[in-house]
Structures are given as structure tokens and as C-alpha cells.
Image (cartoon, rainbow, N blue to C red; front, side):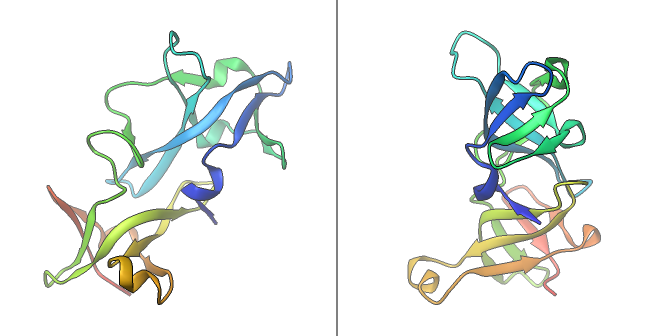
Length: 157
């Protein structure tokens, strides 16, 4: 299981040339499929377009970072790519409510499987003073998440 905080800032390298392609700055998601679809990369050059790396194209992982087979593994970012941390449709900061309308918390992080991208759950906060009590993690199933305009509605397990 992996979280956004664990992969944020990790380097991505090309396996053929061992050249650094960039750093992971965000996750891309698809809530209808309940999946993290890939990583958003920044190569540090402001004049180049941002790139995405699909989870399925990650060839390996070491302490140094992630590896892909070729530089062709990087895809151009399109408007349909939704981001976890940045952007208009970001998931971080969204309110999670139970089906009866009670607020569960605000999303701080996401737990997902690195091999498939399946979202396992969300780390949420209820506010500053509640955070002193500890981390709250909400587990979800694919069928329990309903994306509404200003919040996520889930069935809490």
C-alpha cells in the first residue's frame, strides 16, 4: 500500500540511459473507476510541458526512485487528467460525508495499491484539535464512493 506523501518528490529514471526524467509532484486519479491512474512529473524546466507516467508503465523501484523502460513511457498531460494535490478538481481538501449527510472529515492523503492503482482509503482530518488525537483513515470500496459537486459521499466501514 502506498500514499501520496510517500511518493511525492520521488525521482523517475529511464532504465535504458539511467537519466533522470523528473520528480513526482502529484497523482492523477479517476474516481469513477476508484483508481489512481498515474504520477504527474515535473522535470524542473519551465519551458517544457508536464508529463504523466501511468502506474502500469513503472518498471521497477529502488531507494533511488522509480524506473521506466524508455523515455517514451512518459505521456503528455491532457485536460482530462485530474490531479490529487493541485488543480481545479483536486481531491485533497474535499469534504467526505456519510450517506446520511454527517461530515466525516477533509481528505489529507490517499491510500492506494501501487500495482493496480486501486484506492483503498483516505486519510482525513476533522480539524486542528482533532489531529492531536491521531490519524483517521477511512476505508472505502469501489461501490461506496459517490462524487458530488462539493464533496465525496461514502459509506463508512
